[in-house]
Image (cartoon, rainbow over all chains, first blue to last red):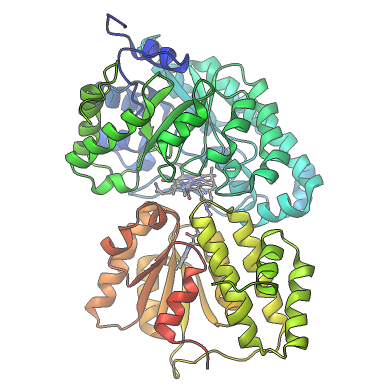
Length: 350
Length: 214
Ligand code: B12
């Protein structure tokens, strides 16, 4: 039994080794909340690496959770290729119209040069600043869109589904460019100080494509991309389902899977025990109208289902908590983890 | 409910993306059983899309299969001679819109399903709550189906609905899209008249508010 209190990093490493740390680690994957903290608009908040680093550090100080999150927003990766980003007052930025408008553009498609692309440089700057301030006390989680999921924003969802289903040659051509970009982008974040990379790959989820198609497409792409990323990775299906592919995910070389509130955490735990750690699965959408009691009940249930034996990080089910989730709910989640998440987990309470 | 035999085979053809097989089942039904277009829709298309939608919502099928099934049905039904479903008088029937988001796949699938079900639609594209309110006031459709992907857009529906209530507009608002699926109470919170958890639910909603087959 661990006698002394661990640092966030030690706690996370212990659980990823499928051992029980002092308590269940908590990742509050907050992005736009940093803007609230600094009383900035979401657009202004994401305009500079410094503000995001400051926001993340303030949020960790306030909630005492176990990571810093250097994720800005998914469309930063289309902005980098020249695509448009749309900002909203009350939610995360979105990608504008697809920037690949015809398949002929695939022939001349080249990935952006990371260090010289201002929007990516901002993320790297935020990562460096966080690292400088936090050192080895807490993990910094960087993010890349998987090469397989990115095309939804590059081409549009419908055009991309048509390509996956009917034009494998073009698909392979696009994957080649995207894999080199994703790998370089992940490695740049690791060099800047990220501890691990969250590989967002919801297109691989059985919610979006059947397993047979995944095995021909998203799976080999993940195997190749993850093998070239110079650090630990977690695969997040962004609240898409995971159960039918957990064994496949384990074979891609990822250490963690981010799981959905739509699936039973206890069943997932059995399927992943000693193979993959689980990250999840509090329902971020429902959370906006939770009261403290709801937060306690949900945290307690998740901990009972997935924490024994380690291999579990409590988090939301999407990899980002919505802007509308109130402070009291976040505070209640933190208190509940401290109350119910001490190892060994006490079953008697339930 | 899917009946046995051909109906079931039709569903299987859809989920395995076999356009040709799906088409030949329908044309055979038309020739051999002398079914009308509406009978085909009622007997084959609606039950198959309904069961595919329900299986997706339960995690048994994938979105790509839902998308392909809708598209195949839309094409086949287009190839058959059109007959109209009940027309709600001179009033336009169904408006379809994406609120705020630049994510049109949900609307695209709902549109395929409704067209495959024999309905005609007014496609409003992407609009803000204010623009939608204006259009509804001008067109006065019986029903508007709103698709969203972002939570902030889902919450915007509330504004559109309260504006409509203020001017006693009788248009019914049905909502759908990821946030409404992931929080089953959200539709009530935004004051919608109906919710769909899969695109096929749009057929039941349309039936409820516009009536069924002539
Ligand atoms: C795949 C995915 C991605 C992919 C592609 C997204 C895309 N379409 O552009 C990537 C990785 C790029 C991505 C990124 C982001 N994502 Co995302 N993503 C998803 C995921 C897994 C599926 C989304 C999807 O496109 N589904 C396909 C559509 C067609 O499905 P659907 O909307 O459910 O529609 C079906 C039914 O609901 C129904 N339907 C739809 N509309 C209507 C209307 C009516 C009237 C009826 C009857 C039925 C109906 O028909 C469809 C078929 O049955 C969802 C989570 C989930 N489990 O669904 C999150 C989700 C949509 N993402 C989310 C977010 C926030 C984002 C980002 C903003 C994150 C960020 N901070 O950057 C970005 C934005 C990306 C962008 N395009 O700008 C949130 C949105 C809610 C929120 N929290 O605000 C979700 C819901 C995750 C979550 N649990 O919170 N994402």
